[in-house]
Length: 158
Image 1 (tube, rainbow, N blue to C red):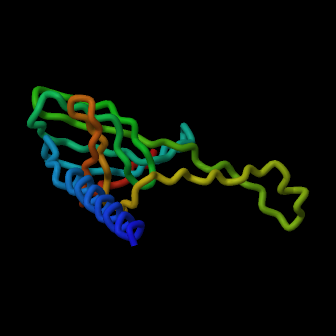
Image 2 (image 1 turned 30 degrees about the vertical axis):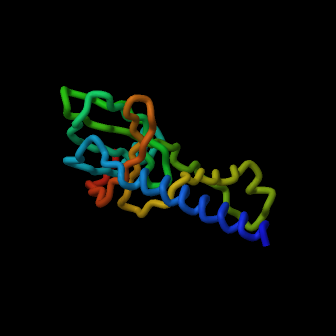
């Protein structure tokens, strides 16, 4: 009987602590606003590359703000923020080599040398196709901000 009461009390405490932590994360308002958010696909046949480029423009309400990366389209974008007073631009590019020609033949010996396709690494978040997640820091503490309705611009093919 006593052990059952202890289990109930511990369970309630864990539930309250879990709800409290989640509430703190979701109620935190980001110290910036997003003004513009876009992306486009590109392909450069001369270099044999293709990928996605993102651009997020915003206004910061604090000076103790830094940005480290953006998650988008199942990729991690290392970004180099451009900051001008309180305005910022986050730009990032994810590039991959275009697929080399593969030998497809009924004779397996003629297919020797084909490379197995690389499996893309999944990001640790469930995002829709038009959503991005910004990782930012305030006074050294990391936070996350979801950007919705990313605008797709025309593809660039060279």
